[in-house]
Length: 153
Image (cartoon, rainbow, N blue to C red; front, side):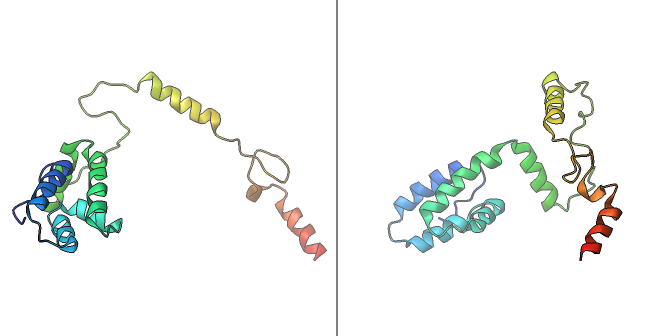
């Protein structure tokens, strides 16, 4: 059981762990859960602990659900883990919305249309006191209003 480590996908790890678990009949549920969690990669173990799994069946189900979440682009995950384990190095900040270097790609029509639709659906700013094009906190006659309120009191 100790030789099994989570190095590939979580799904493969769960399958291997399940087959090993069936070969070792005298382990308790707690020991199985401990071994399952202990041999996971750090991020997966942390995620299971954050979700508060208490039994092996739940841990396996939650772990398999993490596969799809983390699978995305495995090169990104590996490069992030490598930079953290080796001390990082120089980080280069870049605008993630900007086209990548060496790419002559311009924003596509769908992205432009999406931006236009978002602008169209944003509610217009409107003062609830006078229906003017400003927020109530920027009400132009606020001093007069405050004076009238204070006068009443």
